[in-house]
Amino acid sequence: MDAELKQQLDRIEKFLLEHVVTREELLEHVRRLEEKMATKASMENLRDSVDKFAKTVKNFEQEHLALKEQMSTVQGWIRSAAKRLDIEFKL
Image (cartoon, rainbow, N blue to C red):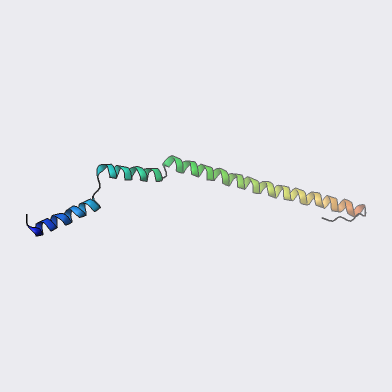
C-alpha cells in the first residue's frame, strides 16, 4: 500500500472515529434527551399548578381587601364611640 493512500485512509478513519456514532450511542443520546425534555403531561401539570396558585393569590387579595374594609368600618365605629365617651382612641 502506498504511503499517501495510507495517510488518507488514516485521516478518514480518524474522522469517522471522531464524528460517527454507533446505533447504541445514538440511542443513549436520545434517551438522555428524552429524560431532560418536559413531557406534555408534565407541562399540563405545571400549567394546572400555576393556575391554582394564581387563583389562590387572587382569592387572598379579595379576602384581604374585604377584611381591610371591615377593619376600617370597625375603626370608624370605635372612633365614634370613643368621641361620644370622651375617650382618646389611639391606633
